[in-house]
Amino acid sequence: MKKLIQDMSLSAISAGFIAVLVGFASAVAIVFQAAQAAGASHEMIVSWVWALGIGMGVGCLGLSWYYRRPIIIVWSTPGAALLATSLAGVSIEQAIGIFLFVAVLTLITGISGWFDTLTKRIPLPLASAMLAGILLQFGLSIFESFAIAPMLVGVMLLSYFISKRLIPRFCILLVLITGTTYAWLTGMFDLTAIEITTATPVWVSPTFDLSLLIGVGLPLFIVTMTSQNLPGMAVLKSSGYAQQPISPIITTSGALNLILAPFGGFSFNLAAITAAICTSDEAHSDPAKRYIAGVSAGVFNIIAGLGATVVVSLFAAFPAALIATLAGLALLGTIGASLFSSVHDPQYRDAAIVTFLVTASGVSLFDVSSAFWGLIIGMLTLLFSAKRQPTPNANQQ
Image (cartoon, rainbow, N blue to C red; front, side, top):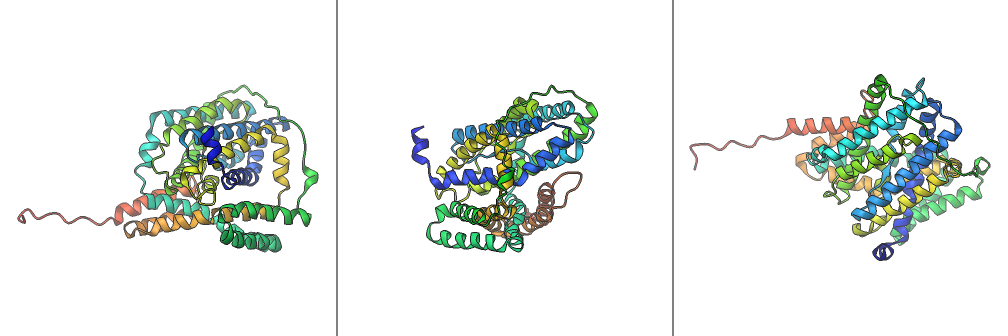
């Protein structure tokens, strides 16, 4: 505890807060859609957010503290999107059965250790290229938001450039304060939508349908592993935490999923986008002290879960342009570092560019995201473009 207090910094705590803010505000609507597709009541939807907040909080706090690294656990946003389109006509009890099935698969994957074996075979330049492709849209969203709210984004950009030069450690925090202040003064917050009530978890007993387990559960598991855990691993790897074992994280995610599934915790996994906020230089110049960002993200997630009703309505009050710009600016450094790492070595350059382009394209085949296909096609490019080493001549000594 003493070391935790000594390592605390405002920049790392704010990075954890921003990661939670961006995570909830950018994707909680998809969770609502998934819950509504399964016929969940308002109380059940609040319970889903409660379960997700508690699960993410315990995962972030526990793993970051234990490993002394910024390990961010989140819900699967692509998984929520898949559920939103796949749960129509499915009862809430059957949906909970699907969540428990995915939890068991995740637990087996973590305990078996096969995911660790797979990730060790992925070259760092390709992992970095995949990460850059994922994050590209967030960088572009800064300037897409500029067309929607030019004054708000302009003020945030000006704040970013000034604070980046003068006090870089607190750069993103100052951008958040500047953007929030401007939005407040100009009436861009919709405070009338805020609802102040206590979140109450709702237990739902599961039922199991084999066709749904195969048709929805298996794709949810695959999507979570390929489009969330693989990019999440890439973030840790490209941020200097290459030696971090992934299997214990997968095991922890599966255990949290198993415990919280009856309350609506549909999946938990290693974060990619929000993790990049916590692993960047803006969180702390010393990589050994960035774990504070993960610990603070855990605390803020738990608070968000306990006050699910209030938090969800509060995040809905933030202007979309503010959230998009904040996320993009927070990830600029990671995008640049990933691009450099991906093309720095000529041996991997072609394969890395292919990985980046396929991932950034957003193409999705068989309900599996472009991040997975970018990595697969990049690995194939590397395989076929590898130069053969000259065979030694038996007559030469």
